[in-house]
Structures are given as C-alpha cells and as structure tokens.
Image 1 (cartoon, rainbow, N blue to C red):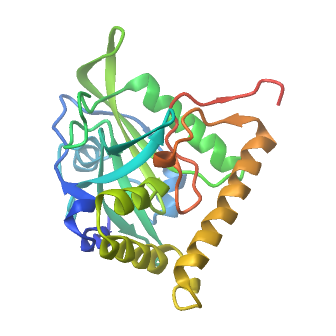
Image 2: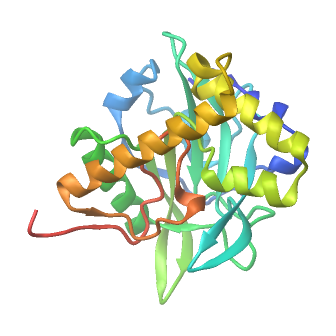
Length: 264
C-alpha cells in the first residue's frame, strides 16, 4: 500500500484546493504496472481495496487529496488554470526514501474544472500509459503510469466513450506555471515560499548556495534544454508545450495530442 507524506500542503492555501475524487461505478483494473510497483517498493496488489484507491472510490491511509492551482501561457494568452481533472493523493515515500507524487487523472471535477466534466476516456488513458512508458524505456525523463482503471460511467466527448482513471507518478507536479501563478496571483512572500519548497524538495544541493533562486533558474533552464534535445532525438512532438505543462523537475508529462514523427 501507499506510504504517504503531504509536504505540498505546507505551502499557502492559494496553491491548492483540498478535494476528494468523485466515486465511479464498477471500477475494473485494466492495466497495472508491476515494474513501477517495484520502483515504488509496493508489493503487487490486485485487491479490491487497492483498485478502489486507484479509482478514487477509497481514500488511502494518510492521504490528503488536493488539486493544484497554477497559471500558464496557452495559445499566446496568459490565464489562470489548475488541475481540472486530476487530484494528487499524496507523496509516496519509498523504502529507499525517494518521494513521488501519486496523482489520479480523470477522477472528477475540481474547483479548477471550469466547464469540464473532470473525467477521462479509456482510450486516452491507455494512450498516456503506452507513451509515457515508451518514453521511460527510451531513457527520456517522464511521468509514469501505474495503473488504468476502467469505469462503468460513460464519458461524453464527440460521442459516448468508456471512462477510465489513470494513476500518474512523478517526482513532482510543480510547473513553470506554478511560479507564474505565484508571481501574478500571489505575493512576493508566496513566491519565496514556493521557491524555498522547490529547492528543498527537488534541488537540495543548491538550496544553501549563493543566490539559490538564480541557481534554481539555471538548473531548470539546463534540464529543459536537455529534455527538448532528448525529444528531438526520437522525433517526439509534445503537442501542448505550454508553461503549465513544463515541469520544474524536468519530466515530460501531460500526454495529450502528442505524436512521434514517423521518419524516426
């Protein structure tokens, strides 16, 4: 089972909203990533309780679910955003003391859903599972997919689709857009707290150096240059490379309208 900590909610309340996943009907496990379970030092578990946790029907022990607030530049416009269909259950601590966000995607509406239904289709979640795992085995830093759970609730897009919930695993879901949110919708103290938290969690080696905020900027620039070069190496096209989808931890994520160039 998960071993949760909840350090992110030590940040000011404006950075997140506490919200529980919406229950789904007849959750059915379609895929479980057993190799990733080993990385997370979780014993393979197909129990009804674990499936209920992966579907959002049961809150795991020590979980304090929340959705993140952030901003971003989309299609040339700056706007307030947030997790419209994703909820972080907590930060799982592995046996070797590594920290990973465990997030449910497609688990219902949040305060940031705007006019969205907060749900996801089975075909889209299977696609994210496939591509994120492909990127991992191409040695490109990426979010990973732990599980896909099918639901009996229809999801309406152009037509009615089978619904699903995906469990996404990342070192962190802090984005460039999180810093934009702090800068434009918060105070200088909010920005300082976010910077300090990010340094402590992701870049402890530069936390106590000279001008830590500048070192953070330099580190993020370096890893972003590297990750885009890695994408080019395999002909990967992100498709929604906005600042709200740019990870501070240097992980590829948000596999929406992405693709690979066939020539590669």
